[in-house]
Image: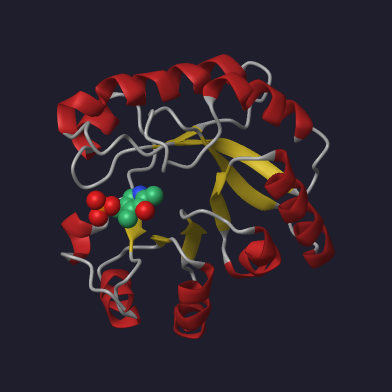
Length: 199
Ligand SMILES: *Cc1c(COP(=O)(O)O)cnc(C)c1O
């Protein structure tokens, strides 16, 4: 996944011309601005990889091909309801908080089972996997235990939920380690597009 947040649409179009089809954006508002030109490209998938505020849930379900940061039954229920009115099934990942940093988003691992249970009846969401962001202090090799833990959670819950395949983990600083630990989606921003500009 090419993480294109804070980069102009022209940068996405360039990546598209080079063959890139999956992008990550972290803000609903920014995606809304980029959407018309991205729609014109056609076969592009853009996932939301940033935190989702309650008042933006319906816009998110309309704009994004998938939401990778579901971390509460309430957000899941809102997305499910919007997807139902749109007549679509929305692919989602659950964001798991493995790091002690208070500013990190995601559901604590000990609440993951309950969240999955709460989502069992949500027919307009398809739970495709788990996502995590390794702690800032754990660059490269130091991120390994967090990636390993996410994979163990996926393997554990996949017995009940066979669609739980994806492991979205690894960024520019730690993607090699993430791939070694079984990542199926690395989210690369800086290493593809360079430093982000403040838009
Ligand atoms: C910005 C961002 C990335 C990309 O980070 P880089 O270090 O620039 O590769 C990946 N995942 C999430 C959730 C992000 O917000």
